[in-house]
Image (cartoon, rainbow, N blue to C red; front, top):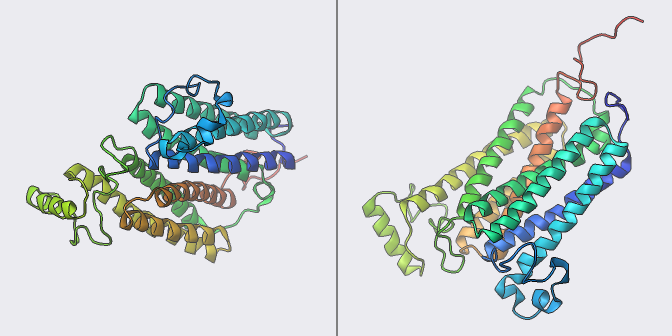
Length: 351
C-alpha cells in the first residue's frame, strides 16, 4: 500500500492489534502479581524452567499444591503469557508490512522490537537476580502496553476518518501534561515496588513508609527529621511494622503528592474533553477515581497482593488510555495532516 495513501488499513490489522493489547493486559497484571508476592526469583533459571524447556514444565510444578505460595505459578504463567504476546506481535508486524501503510508497518516493527527487549530484560532479571532490571522491566512493560494501545488507535477507522476541529489547544496541552505526569507516577510507583529493601511480608521498604491516610503519622507533613522519624518508628513498632527511613518516607510522600497533582491535571483534561464532546474524557475520569481509591486501599490494608496488583494494572490502563486520548486530541486539533504530511492550510496545486 502506498505510504501516502489515506486509505484505511484492513480491519484484520485492527483486530490483531486489539488481540495483542488484550493479551498484554493479563501479562501486565500477572507481572504485577509477581512483584506483589515477591515471586520474581521463584523460577531461578531462564530460558528454561527448573531445567525443563519452558513449555514442557510438568503441570504439577506449575499448577500443583503450593505453586502459588512458592511463586512458581505467578512467574511461570508470566513467562507463558509473554510468549503469547510475542507471537501476536510477530503476526501483527508481518500483517502491517503486507497490508498496512508504511507508518503502521514502522510502528508495528518498533512495537515488536520493544516486546523483544522487554522479554530479554525479564530473562536477564532472573539470570542476574537484578533489582535494577526488575525496576526497568516493570516500567518499560507499561510503556510497551501504551504503545500497543497506540497501535490499536492508529489501525482503527476513527484515526483515518476524524475531521479537524478548532479551539482545542488546551486539550492537546492537558493531554500531553497528563501523559508526562502519569509516566512520572509510574516511575515513582516502580521505585516503591522494586525497592531493594522491600519485603512484601513484613512491610519494609517505601510502600508502607507512611502507613496512614490522608495524614502522615497523624501529621500534615511526613516525619523527616531525626526526632520525628524516631517517633514515627515508635508508632510503627506498635503497628507491627519494621522501622523506616527518611529516604523511604520521601519516596512514598513524593508518590502521594504526584498522585494528587496527576489526578488534578487528568480530571481537568477529562472535563475539557467531555465539554468538547469526547467521551474518552469520562473513561479517564473513572480510571482516575478508581486508581486513587486503590492507592488508598493499598496503604490502609497494608499492601495486600490483590489490591496492590490491581492498582498497578489500572495504572497501566490509565497510561494507555491517556496516551491514546492525548494522541487523538493532537490528531483532531492538528496543524499537519498525519496521513499525507502536508499542511492542512495548503491549497491543491493547479491542474
